[in-house]
Amino acid sequence: MKSSAVLSALAALSGPASATIYYAGVAESSGEFGVWSPTSTPGTGLPGRFGVDYQFISQSAVDTHVDKNKVNLFRVAFLLERMCPLATGLGATFNETHFSLYKEAIDYITVTKNAYAILDPHNYMRYNNPSQQPMSGSVIGNSSDPTAATTAQFGAFWGELARRFANNSRVIFGLMNEPHDMPSSLLLTNLQASVTAIRASGATSNLILAPGNSWTGGHAWTQGGADASSQWLNKLQDPSNNTAIDIHEYLDADYSGTHAACTADPAANLANATAWLRANNLKAFITEFGASNATGCSTMLSSMLDYMAANDEYIGWTAWAAGPFWGTASPCCTDSKNWGSLEPGSKAADGGPSLYDTVWTPVIQPKVPAKLQWTGGASVHGGNLTAKV
Ligand SMILES: *[C@@H]1O[C@H](CO)[C@@H](O)[C@H](O)[C@H]1NC(C)=O
Ligand SMILES: *[C@@H]1O[C@H](CO)[C@@H](O)[C@H](O)[C@H]1NC(C)=O
Ligand SMILES: *[C@@H]1O[C@H](CO)[C@@H](O)[C@H](O)[C@H]1NC(C)=O
Ligand SMILES: *[C@@H]1O[C@H](CO)[C@@H](O)[C@H](O)[C@H]1NC(C)=O
Ligand SMILES: *[C@@H]1O[C@H](CO)[C@@H](O)[C@H](O)[C@H]1NC(C)=O
Ligand SMILES: *[C@@H]1O[C@H](CO)[C@@H](O)[C@H](O)[C@H]1NC(C)=O
Ligand SMILES: *[C@@H]1O[C@H](CO)[C@@H](O)[C@H](O)[C@H]1NC(C)=O
Image (cartoon, rainbow, N blue to C red; front, top):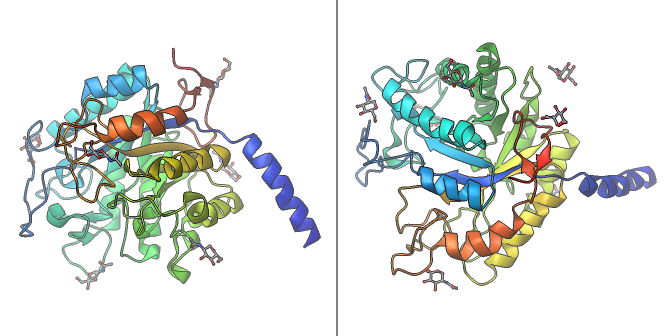
């Protein structure tokens, strides 16, 4: 007891001293738009019309976030069913038109703006029917479901996507958005197939982000007994040792990011995940979090950003969400009210200030570190920190 108490006291001293956020920014959500069907009709919005049903980024909004706000990270959502049409299935055959449009967005962020981009297949570990996302579609690798894409197909998809970005070390591979309601053993099998395929494709150095089960919730990381994410994600093997954990954490009562009130204390709810990261010598990004402008949210959101900055397990974050297609709708945390998004220039439906004005600017922006990584490849070890010039 005595020696472990001393060790943890030392850890408490040494941890925060080296704590660093290398990557900070915003999720770009709109590439996954246009497929929801109230009547559950499969195929709704597929393949979709670029610029009408969906779009990845607005270049001018990215300009504002990089040039004015000085953030260096964007997580850019797309749909597997658009990248890999149902006719050819999940795998290495892409819709080249769709891929080119996506690459144009990723190149804009990483080559033109010198920032970093997380590729985000926004599919909940499901493929074939996004009409009622996040619940619809066959779980990838479910061998009891003859309509499900296989684990091998998921690996082939990632191998091909990674090959195409292997020469761009600013591109980060987010393996999957929010897996849920599936066995964690299958999650690990799918993640391992994709990591193996990514490294075999020649993308030997790009940073990979691996999500857990239960919507990759940080609060839930050690929950679920033998199926807990904590029992599985430390078994993932990366021959290049450049994989971090991808965590989501909202501040409302059920962690869903749908309610305006903030009640879930992030430090308490992340404590177990943080201890697990430390015990397993792993780093993490929190790629979705957010809060409304309601009373109490600014304090709690600030303390969450402080918590990430104070614990060296956390090296990056993207707030949810900006994106060109939100209009006056809100990506999170408003009890379904249309209070706008984190997209610069967006407005609430009543013409009032958007979440960009009421949450990003006053609460998140002051917590963007003055120095971030602007040169070199993305890495679990971070890189050189400099102020954006
Ligand atoms: C490929 O994507 C483009 C752009 O969205 C779309 O116009 C086209 O119909 C798609 N083709 C297929 C076969 O899905
Ligand atoms: C990667 O290679 C492709 C084609 O070979 C090229 O178009 C692209 O500019 C390269 N990207 C980087 C970041 O070097
Ligand atoms: C796998 O497919 C079977 C048959 O359709 C289904 O009963 C089961 O719920 C599926 N498992 C998951 C995790 O979706
Ligand atoms: C990855 O880490 C393992 C264990 O520390 C080590 O043996 C191996 O050499 C590392 N691989 C690379 C490519 O750094
Ligand atoms: C953290 O772990 C402790 C001990 O296992 C447990 O009692 C607690 O409920 C966990 N907290 C969360 C948020 O899961
Ligand atoms: C939050 O923003 C919306 C939209 O501008 C506004 O209607 C609402 O009054 C704001 N809430 C608070 C507590 O300021
Ligand atoms: C950091 O900067 C030093 C000196 O400029 C350079 O030698 C090194 O390669 C840089 N490291 C990375 C990861 O960019």
